[in-house]
Length: 193
Image (tube, rainbow, N blue to C red):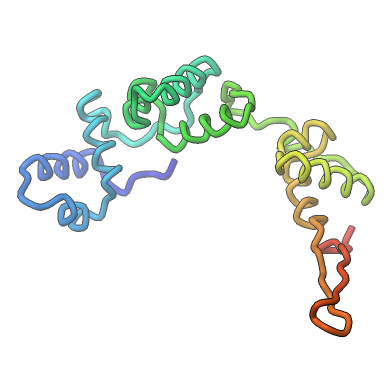
């Protein structure tokens, strides 16, 4: 999460100014150069935690699999907005929760977060060109699930990502005679190994 350009005191002063209601919402947001979501997030955090809620993010926070699942189920029930759930479960941002919902709806596992990187994300191995093509094809066939491909083939996430870029097929159309007659061929984006 990006660091706020506003101090706690500045956020508090902005909230006090908003409560006065001297400007329209649009004018207020333009004057202070903040988004509506930012304003409402600050208000909610201030209501819930006081001045401490306006403090900058303390960085990474562990979210258990159970918390993620409960938050997603509440979101899908329609009884709460994402902003309400962000506060209820003390989630750092609504976009994080949107990612969990996307995983859940895609029938993917909601794993608890850990601070360290996954082994498949950091440790690669040497491969042949044929293996690289096989891994890229596997990844493409599985909706570009780079993480799963890295785990299945015991290579790094970065390697899989690069190979998909390199070996993604491109269809080349060439016309023979009239524009109505053409033939196509598949080539790879690069021949580098």
